[in-house]
Image 1 (cartoon, rainbow, N blue to C red):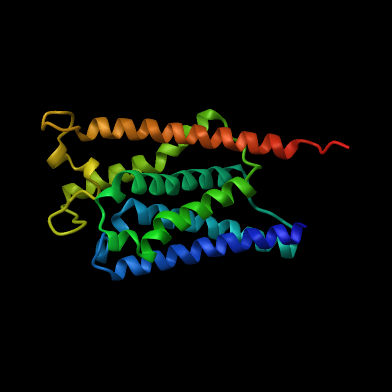
Image 2 (image 1 turned 90 degrees about the horizontal axis):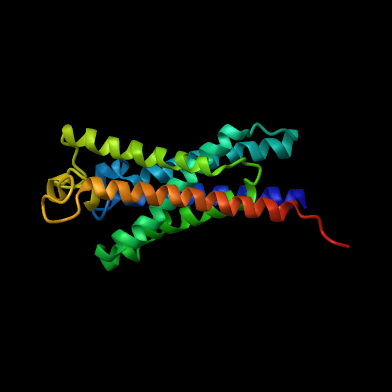
Length: 228
């Protein structure tokens, strides 16, 4: 049983990394959304790379467990993986709720889109809830979920100072971060970047709490002894 479980762990992580690499390579080679030299500037790609790195670390650990019966996974690594899983879940949810409606059909139906925005996130979520039940989460842990998005927002606005372009003449990767068209609050007749950021941070903290709740339920179910 333990061998079969280890094999499933390994296969999920290998599939996640392979899908992520293929999605990034194909995106970089395209002229569509996120394509070209700016591919690594988008949160989608950065969150995919983040979860891929964590999958590789946990994959190495799983191989070591099989060979040497030793694990180096600790609470720090589990919490970093939690942050990475939240980040890739944000990629999944934000794309399909806010960005997909304004995307072209060709891109929506492309393999690279499904790889980066659906397959990798789903594999990451499944992997986390199935195999990381040793994590000791509290609802305060949900604040950790904001680390990756806050770092990315800082990256975007620092990049805008240096005129980093995502596509021609576009200095902000996502419409809700575009201070030129949205303004800071409501002064341009639309919701500015400050309300957008506050709403998204609230959503992310809520998502972190939801992950914590689901994991606690998962741990409680796993600790139940079977009745005779």
